[in-house]
Image 1 (cartoon, rainbow, N blue to C red):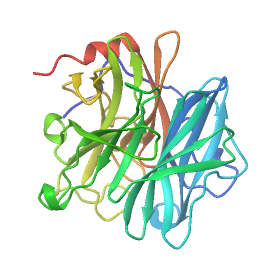
Image 2 (image 1 turned 180 degrees about the vertical axis):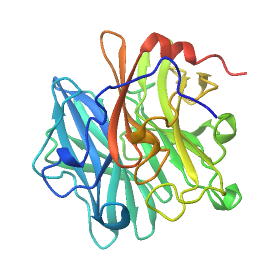
Image 3 (image 1 turned 30 degrees about the vertical axis):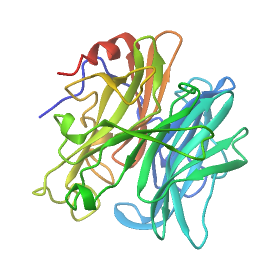
Length: 324
């Protein structure tokens, strides 16, 4: 069994957001994107609405919006934001927020009738969103870097190559870049699932990277699967466990891993993480580097609530030892 790194401190008043904080129908409030924008903390969170608590009969998914002055206490806005639904698009979820050149960009997972697509949108007021691009299926877990690299926008992503990866989960982290956030190319493998000692199923980007003098500090999610696992949550079978890792990417060639912790950054341990809609689940979606050096990591716990953990940036960098 693994355990969380000693450098991580979970917020004593977790969760920072749950269904009780939302002024409209809400059930599972988790996997939020968080950033600082124009002097305030901003959160866009996923809200899955179920018919009955404890049973996985879903009524729909929307994205909620919340603001905070301290990153701890959140005020949820009266209505959901950024709704996309038509004959082709079924729902959007798992947002990630990145501020680039004074504008807030939102990466999204988009379920469609022809597969999962990764979307990029931009907003200046969180009321109006312009959709800039949608990938081909199957791709998601996209996160943007907070500045252009060598003149190009850059992102991490996690495609779903089932056919070419043996017909099962075996998903890795990739890099691509773009001149305009619409057309993407220069695809490079960043990290394979086989490079993460505590994962045997899939990995994917977590929160958007933050820049440090030593490289792009990057959290990711990692999944281990045991087919002997049975009912661990609301569903009849839940065979996976989600944890979080951390790595450092080269500043100029961000598809190159400078270093990575060989042990998990966060492992499911608290009641929120161990029990929920899906037990043993941690999914980081927001990371903020404060001027003090404190790093705030926001993560979905149990696919049911949104939580917060903190660490000092120097301690996180020390974890990213050189790859063997």
